Length: 146
Image (cartoon, rainbow, N blue to C red):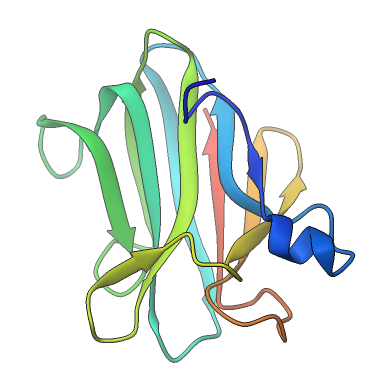
């Protein structure tokens, strides 16, 4: 199975009884679909962000028409609300939390993960960067499929 075609759960949290902590999320989208990313809250001393990827690239129309294979959106430097146009031939959008403690971008640690709340076309992610003592408030962001 190829990475980016299915959700990956955090097995370390599962071993502690939390079976719904997502390490790498994958959402179905269509070619040319727009999504709106909103940064809702940051409860961590570390810099926080979101990594997005599709197989054909992502464009942020308000910034440029350049297509990127993946993008890192940082809570402290991105607009609070941002529209992205996603291009795909396989129909998948990959999503996960990133952070920086001052030594450069990090992600996918042993104890990192996201809880997902799904509403009508809106996905709200509550993130943990590191450590098992958490209320998943290190970063809260949403993605609305438009």
